[in-house]
Amino acid sequence: MTELHPLTILFAAVFTNNILLSNFLGMCPFVAVSGEIKTSLGMGQAVTFVLACTSVINYAVYHWILVPLELDFIRFILFILVIATFVQLVEMIIGRFFKELSTSLGIFLPLITVNCAILGVSLFMVIREYNLIQTLFYGIGSGIGWTFAIVVMAGIRQKMKFSPMPEGLKGVGITFITAGIMALAFMAFSGLIKIQ
Amino acid sequence: MNLILRTALVMSLSVGVLATLLTLSKIFIVKRGQVIVKINGQLEILGEKGDSLLSVLHVNDIQIPAPCAGRGTCKRCMIKVKAGGDEPTAIEKTRLSPEELDMQLRLACQIKLSGDMEIEIESEFISKS
Image 1 (tube, rainbow over the protein chains, first blue to last red):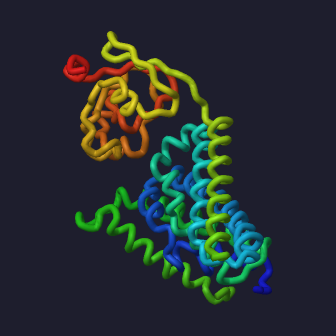
Image 2: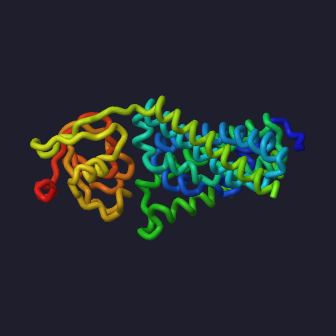
Image 3: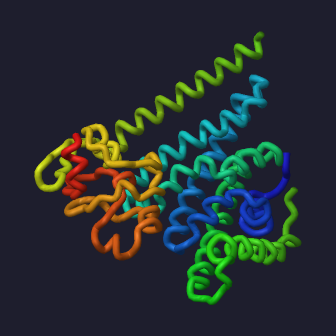
């Protein structure tokens, strides 16, 4: 069992072990939905909500059902099932109560299901042997970290629209280069806290 | 043997519980109800709220071409919305030019029915059906 304070885990998940910029998980929506700050913020909120909830549910499923029954080898399938169900629920709620956000997120909302950051957090929670509170803070922190990275990227991309650049680099090309530079910048935080 | 049984039991139970949860949520959260789609000012068809316009047209035998199967990539299901309909989706904004969006042109595959609407399509699709 890891002895880290939950707030330390939260801070580490946002800055030193940012799920997107240090593990490079969840790159697909990061590249696809980072065109506008408003949309990326909406996507980030949805991902944070799903991350926080699914990590706790998956913790319960893993430690209270799979481990006692010695069935931890089916955790991948069950985690994905839980995530898929939860994303469907979130999609229904956003579609019903936040029509504008649902329209702007479009196809990327159901695609949260296959956002590997979500499954990644559930699997890291198992590998790092977090307890329930640590898992909750890790889920929230990873969501905030992911949102932070995508919103910063959206701001940079909005500014880059008016910058001169070679034709071949426009769009995804320059986005990947920017993501790499952002990851290097985030490495500056890495000495602060060390979690696995 | 015991392990296989346990695995099967846990998997079936989990799928059952999650499927029930989703079905119940769909009943209580998603707004259902019928909407009327008026085509070219002459034909009226009925559709369920939340369904895609393209599928409703196809069910009513109005075979608008959609080679990309409703993914919003081929632009072949372009129609004109005269009344009703939500804001264009992110996919439509990338696929359609600003001029096309100003002319109220939309992709039928991306429109989810939320209320009564009036559309215009090429008359040959209606006469064929």
